[in-house]
Amino acid sequence: MISEAFIGFLNLLLWINLIGILFLSFLRIYFIGKSKVSNYSDLKFSEPFVSIHFAICDEPAEIVLDTLHSFKDLNYTNFEVIIVSNNTKNLSSWKPIASFAKEFENFKFFHFDLIDGYKAGALNIALNHSNHNTDYIFTVDSDYKLHPNALRFAVGSIQEKKVDVLQFPQDYRNTCSNTEGLQTNYKHYFECYLSAMDEDQLGLPTGTLTLIKMEVFKNGLSWPTETITEDAHFGVELLSRKFKIGYCNLSIGTGTMPTSVNDYNKQYKRWLLGNFQTLVLCLKKKEINVIQKLRLFTMLTAWINLLAVPIIISFLGLPFLLINTNSVAILYVLIISSLSVHIITQLYVLLLTSKGNYSLTFKALLVHISTIEIGSFHWLTYFINTHKPFIRTNKYLGKDGVSYHFLLLPLILFLSAFLCLLFDSRIVGLALLTISSIALIGKLRLMYELFYSKDNLSKLYRT
Image (cartoon, rainbow, N blue to C red; front, side, top):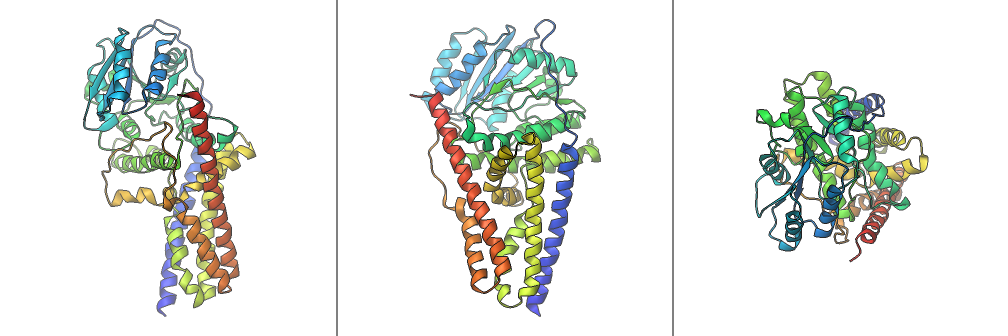
């Protein structure tokens, strides 16, 4: 009786969870299906003054200098660059940058061993040192080399679209045919989610390659330091104040992808938790209406999945296979249904991103599956600690290595499948064996692509 009641309770949880997955899938398919390719414009009038804000924290000097050289080579004259080195005492990472900045009148350099707010705090310092004639702020990450016409296209496009903030897509240069899955997996956020929000001017900024009217900051608004994705949080604050945010699907600069599994996972975890922090704040905003909140909910949960319950119950149900195979089998039907709905939805999203290229879609899906347990569980840590520290992603030839728990999920699934097959629960065993094999292949695919990401970066910066 106790086992039957417990199995019934698990069934109820799975049904509720499946409804949640179906609802989230519906929102994703409905909203991203409305995406459009946005146009860009070249600058048609005189050059407004642009202040480029550039926060760095212990990055390799050679990569930062490469980015700064791209600023120097811009086909634009009316701009300044404010560099804020922060939260490091490593002289070798910032002294060469300080020396470079001294050579140019329109480059300003500041260093702080310790500031509050991490990147957001550094950007707020840059705001305070901006030229009083500044018309636009342009934020750029330390690894992003700008194309020569970047500012011309950015300023021309924001004037054409008549918005207060204009976001451009992230793009990468340490790429090749062996990193297509990574590239497509990153790209889907911009191709589907951000581009879908452009029509209603709801696309949240992503922190780099973001052009902002200076007047936005004139009423006390600054970069928020309460969350670890200050860019998305800043976007929510803008929307609550009725500012307009646009998106332009034009690559105007290239950065670098992570080069190790641990660094990739750190980046992914920051996006998950930071966006969930922002989502909670967004839902509390009375100035944002219900439809807007639904759309922002879809965007802020783009990296999240609702598979924690099915994953946990898939292990809780194993002992009951020995007692009541038929009742427990229903559990696994619901578990597999939940996984299937999520994967089919993601497959649809990636197919849109790749313009129907099945090879690219399959590679990107494997990369997505490789961290499915992070997408399932990490955002839930918000309920344990709502304020977690900012974690900087190392994308500069970091140390190789895979933590032991990276392969833990496929290993546990494989052992579970073995037990099921051992006790004649063949259908469940084969299903778990298939899932564990796909999970393992996904993780191996991620390791493979990150190896080439690192190899490509090392070729660009041979020492």
